[in-house]
Amino acid sequence: MEFKSSDQLVEYSDALSFMDARVAGIHDGSQEECVWLLEHPPMYTAGTSAKDAGLIDARFPVFKSGRGGEHTYHGPGQRVAYAMLNLKERSKAFGGVPDIKKYVWQLEEVIIRTLLAFGVQGERRCGRVGIWVVMPDGRESKIAAIGVRVRHWITLHGIAINVDPDLSHFGGIVPCGISEHGVTSLKALRVDVSMADIDAVLQREFAAVFDV
Image (tube, rainbow, N blue to C red; front, side):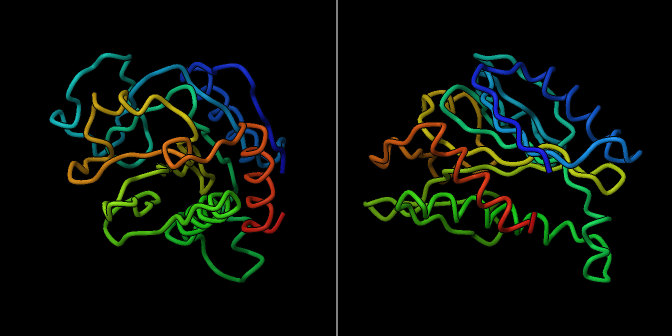
């Protein structure tokens, strides 16, 4: 598996083109699996379940995305990990069939382990996509998003962890269609961490969870 890391902001269209090409290469056997760690300029993406009411204020460009889910914000200070993995080949090792639910669980596990490395307890919530933290006042806030697509049993898109984004930018949408809970970040939780530190842990946990 190749791990890529980009220090400069990556345009969403460039990321989509890369994922499409890499998935095609994985499918024909000419390229290896890949996890790409990056940041985007400020923007909103609308997943396949997005509703018009989920876009409150289009203050940034809005892109239609083939991933599952509703509206999501991406921007500087948020680490995105795009995973292009061959679920069909991976399932052969276990004598089974590709399992998308298991794959989403594995992505959740990568996030939870990464957050824990920095002293933050991330948790799953039934019926709510993403990873959540309990705030000091007892409220629950989302700290990481998940959105996936599968083509030829090869994955696209992935996860986004809020390290130190401008949280006010989330005000332009109903994040993932959930209005009754907030959004937070490592910085808001008083955890100062560099993208390099995040990348090192993400790479370690992707390798551990996906056995590479």
